[in-house]
Image (cartoon, rainbow, N blue to C red; front, side):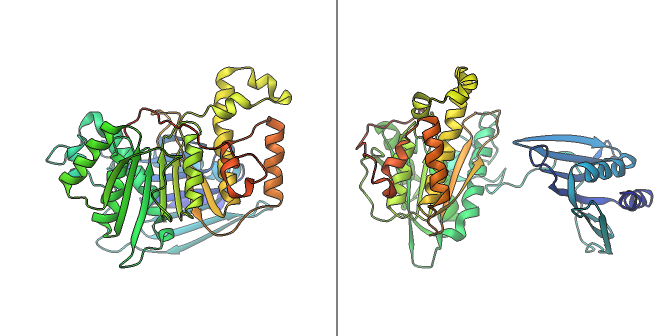
Length: 406
């Protein structure tokens, strides 16, 4: 690592600012996944900030330039196998082989003359819906003033809306939109519909897609308010209906299904509907999950399950993991992603499923059955999906939504 340290120290001594650095390819993903380093100015003095990603948490460390080389070489020696860096005059790549041998490649790479450098400590994040630019639905829903300023008490909601749109942006290619085609989208449990309006605005106004979005919820007064607002804004491709997830029959094929905070097995009915409609994309944020918590019994895990709060959290995580596996068995590439920061709510997992057409049976299905047998659980979603014909279909259930304002 001496060669790498010497190169970095040479940059520092020549006052050649390191503009960005990423340490990746971790030796142990359970310990740390990645470190990003950037320069910043504090009271006109140059520092480097290391942003370390550990599980779902992020830690920050500020250091003086002469501390940087030791920090980086130590991290590469113990935690990472790859480094990429850019300076004002060079680009640098460092790789550690399986045998522990370090290879460093450096080349000249001067920045364009008009490059703007921002070393400020608190750089404003670039959101999909820009700050200080009024958006009609955000103004009407009380997130922004008419001048576009974010209302302080609604800033978390503004961040959440933008985070949601980032997930939507990622799946746009999977929707396969073509000129002259209308995308059919169903939003189950839309609540006050901050995110439903955001989805319409992003697809129709910002991207000019032809869309038909239907928001569905059990609460009549909420639906009436949302319908009135859609009419006021002139969002003609956005409609709201009173309806139950399990009983809704208003569509034959749907391009995208969204279900946010549908309670307990209501999420399962929404996911099953999406599969039956051959939906290209599913975005689901599950809510309270009681079914497996009531069912789970496992002698081997009894020392853990005897603590109620641990059992509840384990049951929720297992529920979503099983749902993800079941969606994969139906031909979806499925991810479990963090939706919003942990400090805001523990219910922060988003299931993102994109239709791939590759059905997964065999070993994965056997493993899932073995897990269910070990835990003595029988998930509702499995009984609702096509390959669960051998199990009894529990029929239409009364479903409910958590009180929410999504």
